Image (cartoon, rainbow, N blue to C red; front, top):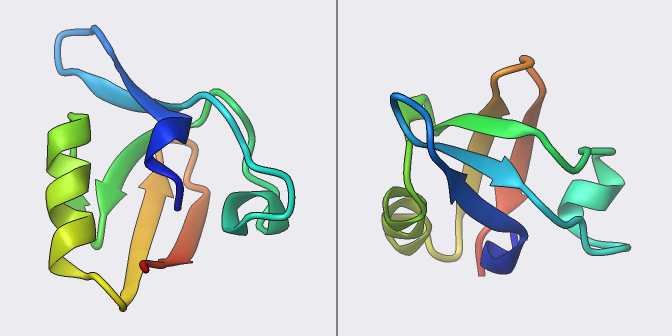
Length: 79
């Protein structure tokens, strides 16, 4: 997944929101939408971009399951 497509938004607990979908990328192929709020990565709650970056580093060259608050899920290959 592309880190630049995400940003933190302020709420009681910060949330990550998808702000851009790269045409032809994994999120585009899974029909994700701009505005999706990401809730978990590999079943662990994430609230900040730093937390997501940590998960991406941990699963480098593997697969990361992201789940949105809407229930939409996607398996992303981490490179």
